[in-house]
Image 1 (cartoon, rainbow, N blue to C red):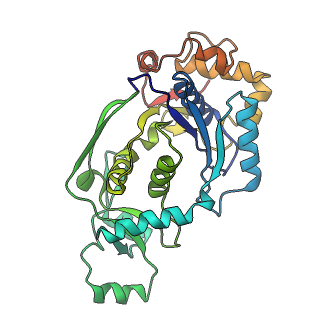
Image 2 (image 1 turned 180 degrees about the vertical axis):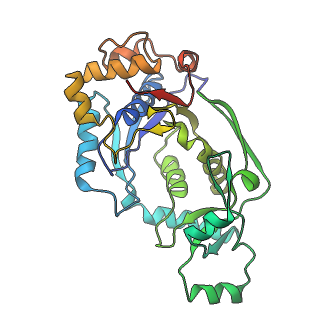
Length: 310
């Protein structure tokens, strides 16, 4: 993000519930980053999870962004329309000999995997070495997921907020899923394909997804796709290590607007507690844009991983 080229950012809500304060913060920073360069915003509805995605939440998400003054320039695009593009990318990986079936259950994974720094379980390669006879036998009992074979490779990048981040794919991640056992393509693959096709050059999202970024960058390299720039914002939490949740309706937007009365008051409060602004005075996104500098944000944050909601 060091040059002056216009950036294309994205809003990428999952339609599984109403937006909460943490979602608003991420979207606000994404909008400010793109617009501060004279760039644009794409709206993408990430509805891969067909069971949990609801049409009412799709409408709510668009209305919520508009209410807050966070307007987009392209879209909405829907992941449920994109299976053909994901399948083509999946086939490319298969042709490279990098994909294999995995028959492990969740219980198997938890029993055999080791957590990496509390972030996630590292797959131990249980199904990697199965021969064709073993795969055929197991396929009679269970429909497999498909994993991408990774090597002893270091992926690193400079995050605009979190700083330098590095991951060894074999040690810190392990072979990861690119297609689930129900046939749905995994988020990691879908988001890489979508960002490239939609021209996204700036990804702003929560720090909980920081550890997924090296895997996405690895997929980009394998598929010949460009790397966007990344900025991972702290999570707004209800209390230490307890993030806000759509399911628990934590700081849900309806309740927030009831509390703060106006969108500007809500945006201003979020800007104040997160370091986007020096005070919590009411402000619109356009007003925040006048003094926005992403480089200053990390210096204004007391904690780069968590911000307590107040």
